[in-house]
Image (cartoon, rainbow, N blue to C red; front, side):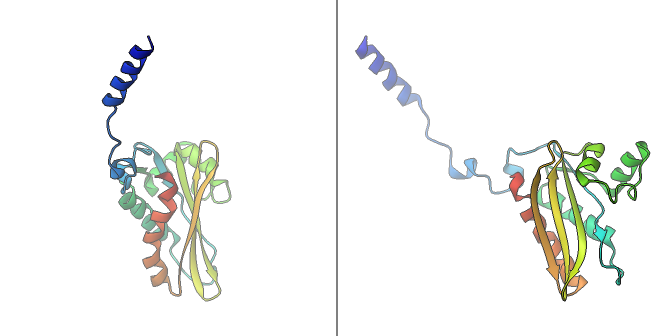
Length: 170
């Protein structure tokens, strides 16, 4: 009996395949990752807390949407128009959601993840402070900030921080 068990174990050991190549276990790109293939992400319009200058917060919101789509093409990203239509169907507007919790707004939209943010001025720098929340349990997934001494520098630094913001989802 003991010999048969050893022979059975030896047979099983020879049937075991070698582990997958490291790149198969640790995908390098988002599209190779098994993480959320059909997850929905909403980027809410950012709040402009810089009162003395005209900075188009909607432009930065759209820039982040585009960067999310480039960084994670498998994510479904709601357009600003999608967000407006979904909120209107519930009798709300974007202005109604301004002071409202971004997680509740994300849930109302049916999004799995929601990105919210603020445009700020800190010292001599412009900042775009972004937060990523998971809407199911309200967990903060990540936060990042882009900065620049001019609005043009801030614009140039916005896309690269989206990769960092989405990195916990990989």
